Length: 321
Ligand SMILES: [Zn+2]
Image (cartoon, rainbow, N blue to C red):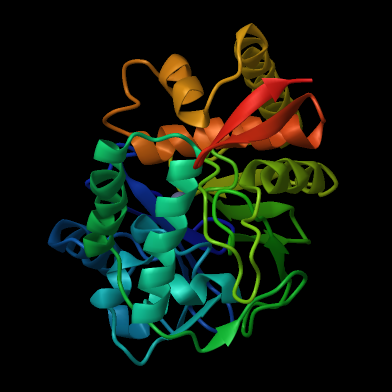
C-alpha cells in the first residue's frame, strides 16, 4: 500500500460486490479527514484498522468523514467508526442514511410504479425491489453533522473544493484541490468502467424523478472545465488524462443510445423489452442495474427528441419519431 502521497493516503478495503475493492482516502488537513467509509463487513473493518495502524493511526484519530455518496460500499464502515466522528455529505444523501419508514414506503412505491411503467413483468417486481433492500445490510445509518454543496470548502480542508457531481447518485460530490488539480472522485470517474446511472425517487417535495444519465453527462462536461491532474477513484486505479476519458465515455453512451433508437424503430417497445435485448444474459440477475442503464438511454433519446413515449395500459411504449 502507498503511504502518504500529496498529503493523501489511500486505504483499500474489500467489498462483497462485483465491483471489488473500494478505496477510502485520508486527507491530512487541519482535521484528519476520511473520504468515504467502505462497506459494513468485518473484513473491511479489519482491513481499515490494519492500514490505519501502518500509518500509526487509530480510528479514533479520524476527525471527520466526508461521503462522496450514500451507496453501501462508501458508507458502511460508519457502523464501526466512533460515533463521535462528524460526517459530512451532500443533503440528498440524508434520506438514504436516515432511512425513515416514510422514505422506505416512498422508495418501494416509486420503484413499483416505475417498473410497471417500464413493462417489467409482475413476477419480477417484488424480488427486484427486495434485492435493492438486501444491499442495505452492507450500509450504515448515520446522521450528518453538516451539508456539503457546490464550491464549499470543507472545514479543516483549506484548498479543497466540493464539486457536485450528480448522476451515479443524486447526492454525489467530489473533492478537487485547486493548487495541484487532484480530484478525489468517488465513483464519478473510474478508469475501467462507467458508473451506473442509478434511478432514484424524486427529490423531497417533487413529483418528477431525476434523469441520472442527463445529469451525469452534465457532470462530465463540467469536469472538462476543471484542470484535473490526477484522479483518486473510489474503485480501480488512480489515473490521469480525464479529458480523453470523458470524451470517450460521452461518445460511447451516445452510441449505445443510438443502438436503442434503432431497436425502437423496428417496432415500439417497453423499457423492459429493450433491457432484454441490450443485456440478454444478465437482465434477470441484475434487473435493477440493467433497467437503470436502459432508462438512461431512453431519457437521453427523449431529451434529444429522437423518440417519443405513448401510454399503453399501465406501461409506457417507446416509439420512433
Ligand atoms: Zn456508488
